[in-house]
Every structure is written in structure tokens, then in C-alpha cells.
Length: 340
Image 1 (cartoon, rainbow, N blue to C red):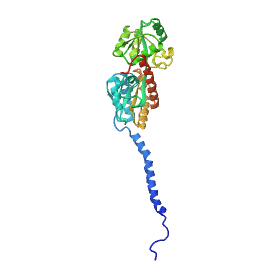
Image 2 (image 1 turned 90 degrees about the vertical axis):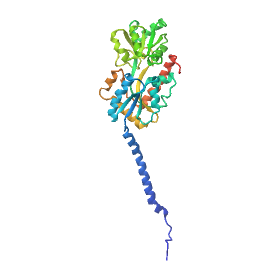
Image 3 (image 1 turned 180 degrees about the vertical axis):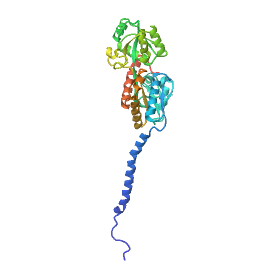
Image 4 (image 1 turned 30 degrees about the vertical axis):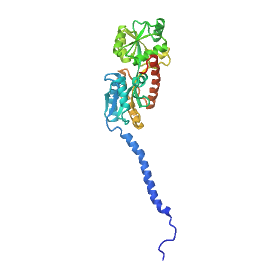
């Protein structure tokens, strides 16, 4: 009597069904992972988003933030709120966002001076390249050079010739030491190799007032500051700081084409997120910004405050940031501003 089979048992055949079941289960789980990631990307946002503005309400940066927030609310299907955090030249807002959770719900309406100028002249608690992820450059605006009617110059070349003929005779106003208007003019004076005295004011408004009165001879300002006064006859606009002529002032030559190739000082406002924000979320916001800017009437609304709509990609915005850090570092040296 045989109590057991004397033939060898093929264990591999007995284990094969179990192994196949385990392998199938593992493959099923792996197949689900892309779906999980995709689900997270497509469900964002699930709560309101906050855009932090580094300046007080009413200025260009604040206006741009509120205009784009209104459209993003419609595009993303969640409320996009604007919060102003003022102080330290914009540094308080930048530091706040840099330390926020990198989940896409706290964004910075970054302004060029906060990202490219402030870190060049002051010690800041944030690094514009290491602590932030560029999302999209919403809009930019160049500056325009205005001179008082008493200055016998109709273009940049004539102003340079006058200044070289009479060193120290002419001065230029700014909205404050280290301001964009100051550094733009300082960079121009340095490249033109002319001698002009800097007169600093507490903001652009008093600088424009003294330009109109003839107390200062030249001022680099926003379009919204100077263009409204052009028709009054007290000032002439003789140069634009962008690479190309502005559609708002097509008759005014750029400074670059006036004998100073490569001259470019342009301010911008764009959305940035804390470093570590998922790439899928960053791209979603960038796409939403582009869609929002393409909506009817958006270009006109921005042009009313002297801003040209952009809607760049994250990579393009990053390139702009790096280029401007180099430009404004040079300008800070020209203005002899030391890091404090």
C-alpha cells in the first residue's frame, strides 16, 4: 500500500498561480499611480487662492493683481483673493510667500523691483532665484524719459549733447534713492558718460510736480505718470526704455535706437510661487493666466494703466528674471548704491 506519491512534486507549478495573482495585483497598483497623480493635478484648486501684493492698494502692481484675480476666479472656478502686505520695499510680502506652503494656494504678485533691485541693494530674507518658482509674467511696462520744455532737446541725442557741453548743469529727478526711476536714469547717465545731478523725492508724484514746474530737467517715469501731461506743453517725452517702441507712443524713439544699443529698463509684474510647488500646479496657473489675458477686454484694461499684457511660460519668466537681475545689479553699481 502506497501512503504517498513517490513522484517528485513540482513546487514551481504549485506556486505559479499565487505568483501570478501577486504580480497582477502589483501591476494593477502601479497602473493606478499615474491616475492618482493626474487626479491631484486635475482637482486643484479645491479652495480659495491668495495673491499677495507687496505694495499698498491703488498702484500698478495692486491694479494688475486685482484685474488678473478677477479673471482667474472665473477660469479656475475658485475665488482668487488679493491681500496687500506692505513694508520693507516689498520684502515683507516676498518673505511671507517664500515661507508659505508650496501647494499653489499662496502666490506672490512679484514686482521687478522686489525681485531684481531690492536684493541688489539690501540684505533680504529671500532669494529671488532659490526661494521662488516663476509661473507667468502677467504684464510689463517700460519707462519714458520726460524733459522740461526749457531743455532745448527734442530727442535723446540732443539731451546728451547738451549735458556733455555743460557738465553738471542739468539734473534728474527720481521717486527715491534705489527706485526704478533713479536706477534707470543712473544707468542712462553712466552709459552716456554725462554728468547730471540726482534729485531724490519721496515718490513719483512730487518728482513729476517739480518736473512740470521746471525745478528739475529730466525724469524717468511710468507712462501713467507722464503721458497725461504731454498735451499740456510743459514737458516733452523723448525716449522709451523698452527694446521696441511702445504702441502707446510710437512716435517716441527708444533709448536703444538713440545710440545706446542694449539699453533696456522695463518693470513687470508676474505670479510666483514658493519653491517646491508641484510643476503640474505651476503649469495649470500659467495656462490659466494666458487664458485670462486672452479674454475680451483684458488687453485694453491693462493698457489703460500703461501695462502690456504678456502671459509668458514659467521658463520664459525665469529667463526674464535672470536677465533683469544682471541689468539692475549694473544699474545699482552705476548709482553707487551699496548693499546695506
